[in-house]
Image (cartoon, rainbow, N blue to C red):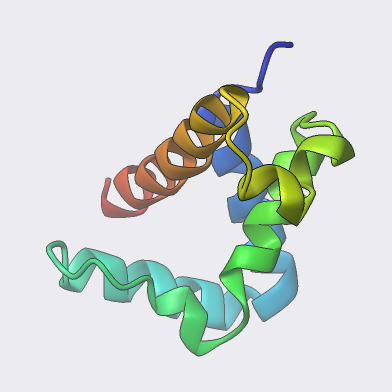
Length: 100
């Protein structure tokens, strides 16, 4: 199985985040990330449950629903590391794009 690129997930996340919080809050989130480049806490969580939006972004980018199952995430399945790597890399990409 091929997982989507972190870039594709990050783009889907950014679209979903903006749709969820609105344009003004989205700009505030981006500004906060730029103003605090070493803060590991994502300011999006002040406005919504960003993990839900990332979950939706993973699905929108083509991750099968079966892989989004919580049991899968807690399993010893070797694909988990690839899934988690894409999820984490998508966050990193979103942050990099926000700081640019």
